[in-house]
Image: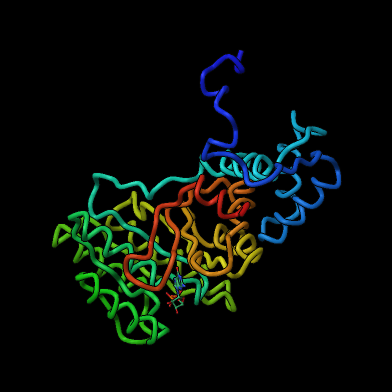
Length: 298
Ligand code: GDP
């Protein structure tokens, strides 16, 4: 029937869509699947998830002759299917102040992400307060003050080495008194002494709950894409230290394509609220599963 349509009668040479050369098709066989697995593993996806993705790809397609474009598209579709359920922006509640605890190892991009989030919420017309809860790291406090200035958001600090929980309590008091919409609380990321960190985070939560039993409303774990598979163990560790409700992955503007996000989605199913795509204040983007899947499959 297709041959009878007018378009089909147009000589191939005269159509602009004529391919430059013959399309090479390859059978989706074991050899091809193995190559694809290796590609996915190299993107930090991990062996288990890479195997699952290629198994899904093979279903209904095994042995068929496909072009490279078809294979890439099908692979991207399989990845997007895993990622779609976790691509969710941070929920905003009507209850104020909404308390957002931000956790993650030092260097993951916590401070930067807090600055970017503060700026986005400000732009959306929300009033925001930041609490510099990593009181043991003077550099982190200074860094947050710079971000606060850029975002036009007040930053509450406490003397170096003082109790972060007491700062969190003061911040809650101020946020309530001023009717702030959001309170973003930075926390320490020293994994060297995990018992201390656990106690510190637990105490912050206890103290916040004296003011609002429903807080913190979000606990964001910030992960660095360049750490690859380490992100998996960081999620495992931080889920023991705090009630992680969502993820932000930073540094996706570099060479790291963040394949580990697929493994994370597969294993934990935690929502991915945003991704960091640079060092500037506007470099925080919503997580787009299709775009991510396309970038990963090349
Ligand atoms: P913290 O120790 O977790 O608070 O981490 P910082 O926020 O201080 O970030 C550590 C470094 O990573 C800084 O040099 C940031 O500029 C950089 N950084 C953070 N997020 C991103 C990102 O999305 N892309 C890039 N390229 N760099 C980032």
